Image (cartoon, rainbow, N blue to C red; front, top):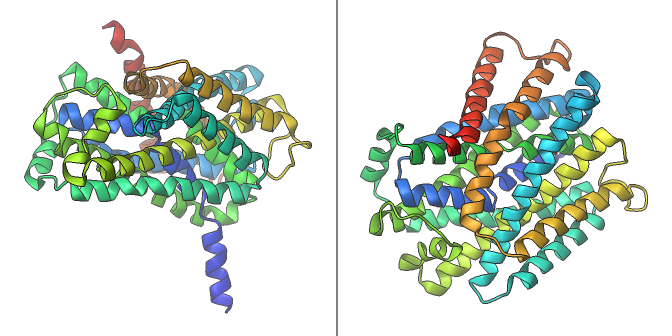
Length: 407
């Protein structure tokens, strides 16, 4: 009986990593992976595998900082670097979150259009649902609902299996890397930006604090993060493989311009109705869980710098600004989508923007891991060098993303 209670206690600590990783494979990431498979086949498959340890390294630092210090990312930057740098960091967060929310609601709108539902209705219902979930729930209930919604993304794993990809073609794609092609490099950067996003760091660090986890939960939190990193990249791989095995075979090099074209990749082997339903479920699940995470990340991050009360454990009348900021982000993102936007082009551009912001976001994360933690938990030795190299490489690619349009 005691062992059973201990196991239940361990599993109860799982959640923040799964939620943030389900959100990581958001509408923009789905479209970026699909675009990669359509244009380059399996040639970006190796990158998706390499990103598993990279996204784990980044998010583990956020978890470590949150569990050991008991403070969110913005609060630590304010404490160790001052107001100016804290507001700069939160400003990049707000920009990234607004861009992400547009892609999330555009994903909902695109899925709705597959069934003839007008964007104003599908997006309006999504905003209403997500507002009710947070305004009426605790942290734990929001986390459980987010995991349930995000689990619909696992549909993509089944779809990839049913696509019957060629093992020989996949192996060939792993070894043929056209790194001199500007279009290929652009999608490399877009995929990095689709996996490592500023709001993930803010959300993950604040979530473990709001859940009441401490340094004693570090081992469990790391497992939660590792599991999430594997799942999110398996989903990205599944989407890339599905499109590469369909559109990538029958129309190689063809760029995707609409959500309908991505959905069409599923219909040859699943049937028009079944394929469309599966794609819509996966897209809506990805979009909604990300919209929750992105809006909460903004509400937490802005509160950490400005000082207003910020917790899902507070009722709306006790922390009004927290809930107002959360809802305002949903309304702004939804409103921009209803006004009309090209989902595919915007989604890839948002991921590139995320990559361009990485030098600021990852720079602060790395410096805090060196400065804000007690000696026992601080980065040191070979691992500190490895993390530094990962941060530097991601930052360089981010800078490249910012200047590539002008080259």
